[in-house]
Length: 145
Image 1: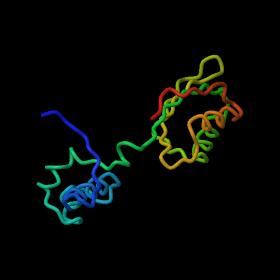
Image 2: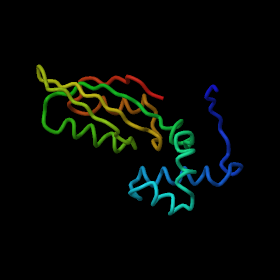
Image 3: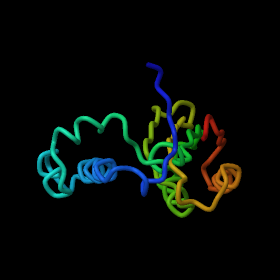
């Protein structure tokens, strides 16, 4: 059978589907240490959880994350990376990953994966803002949703 994704309002689904999402969130946030404890807390059986856990996802979690990958070239000076991270925070970006190469010829290449789900800024606004930080040589958007 071919996999097909649909969007359905949770109010028309069986309660177990909503509870599976609650269990997944409890486990992801480490509010419960085991699936058994999380299932007990929300009031579903572990078998129901395991039946649906790989097939049920929140729309916000999967489709509206606005994840972007950025590439930046930074001067090899103290505080430049910290300034970039602070600026991303100020722009309501959630930093998912940071990978920095060893500086060569006075600059270091850095890639960032960020989530802009709560940000009011567009990717272009973000890129423009970052270019004004002292120590940034170049910023390029590699990909974005």
